[in-house]
Image (cartoon, rainbow, N blue to C red; front, side):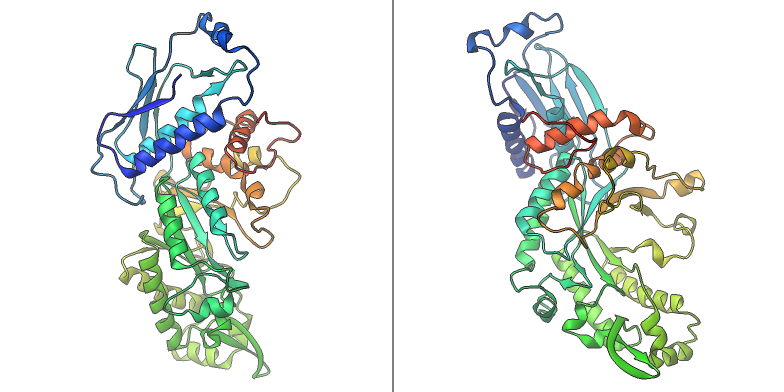
Length: 463
């Protein structure tokens, strides 16, 4: 094989850059590093094999709708592709309607290549018509511990190697506010660990563009009404004062839902965020809300009585609905955590994402990768229409005990199991049969520079 990828249709910058990336992987990561046979004999072991049908000189790339691909991937992007590898004299081609499909097909093509000891590069004849089971296939990355931009870009490479298409960026939390807001610069000035441990809007733009070149959306999460202690470093009036025996304790709890300033602040911040993060989806958080501080606050009690709000759960709903209304006015779709709802989300007719069984920060004795194959997104009591409301899922890399030095090995290859589960048809393989594939993919990612942990216990990768 001579590694020639030829575009036969109108291309795009995304396609051109992708071809360069994958050709570089073929040349630098796929081929063996040492030759064990003399140059003149390199073809003998395989050319005489009865299964050898010829050389693959060219893989034709056909982008059928080059003018219809969007500059940025979105929730409706089409990722299906057709890959045909037949024989030396046939037309071997990768075709797709969109550039996003071409990206997924290129990844498949490279995963089908395998080197032999004599430094030949082989591929089996095959015909593949492929598309994802779920439209939304993501990884949540929590950057409460500052993760350098270079590390996040490398993470996006890893997502593309696993055909994941959403980078869910949990960018703030109780411990730190690392996003530099131009509307409220005090947030990061007071809420970051160091003034250098922040994400500028230029950093965000770089990450979004890098992700888009790999067919990956970037969805930001600004989590309220809990997880906002760092916000209060600059704006304590945002938070609810805690009381004991009707006396302020000096401590603060959740966002104050009774203060008009809260809603003015949130509207201004979300307006900026929607401008900086162009995806039409915004995650508003709303998980792990603890009511003790609200319960102790006499002003909040009086507010609830005035507005006939009978419980703190309903007070939370009052706040969240106002924030969702702001998002609606900004023409973006809101995502919230399941805790916002007291009943099943699908029963309410809302689209749903699954993440509960793919928490990557949960420590165990190993073997998590194959275990994660056992998680089935539609394994719940519901009818067919309700199960259609499940549009995908995410593996979650929460950041309490994860930083730039261990995040890669904590994520991979465990997240690869979730990625395959979200791409493949239901029941493609039980976990007991997936281990060898995960082992091979782990070595593949290692060769491409992604740090991974062993998926199945002791073993090795020949790099």
